[in-house]
Image (cartoon, rainbow over all chains, first blue to last red; front, side, top):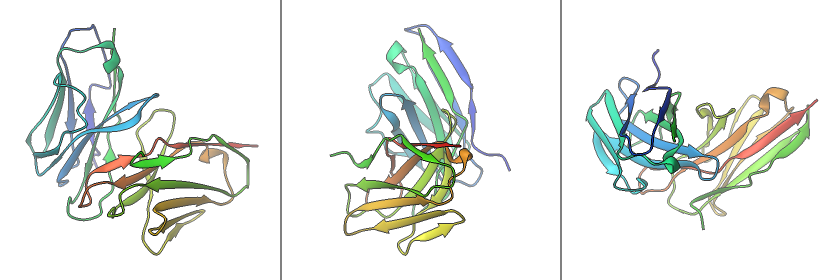
Length: 115
Length: 111
């Protein structure tokens, strides 16, 4: 079975550039989550969607960050303009049912380095 | 107070030892509880869900204490391969869905 698929695996960019991270959730899953992980702050929830609708984006750090989910099989997280402090591992995760206890299934993550 | 708190460790134990971790949460209405493991910055992987009555999966036992708002993970007969970070996950909204991670507890099992 295909799990959560994220791309790219690694991204190195210069400060000020636009970065787009992509995620394909597990087919049939109705919730999608974006997390960011750093040594200092651990795993932070940035935003999550239920049935393609953003439910809570209170974790998005600044207006430079935006996320979309145009359909049930695709989501993007965009940073524009990027800054060195955005360097982190970004994980996408999906879960099956937002109205029941459902564990998260993670993608491999995108390791972002902004120089 | 943080929404989900864990002792960062590290816990250093010999092979074969029994070790336990706790995780406290702030929202008394939380319904979803999980333990995840994460190895060397790879993606977190589900270890086990935590049910109200407590549950066991092989060498691992999870407990929920609603009155004191904490969950626990007990590992028996520790193996070298158990040397990872254990992440506590709790929902912090009124439903089941907004899942917040603790900072993780590092376990180091030595020969």
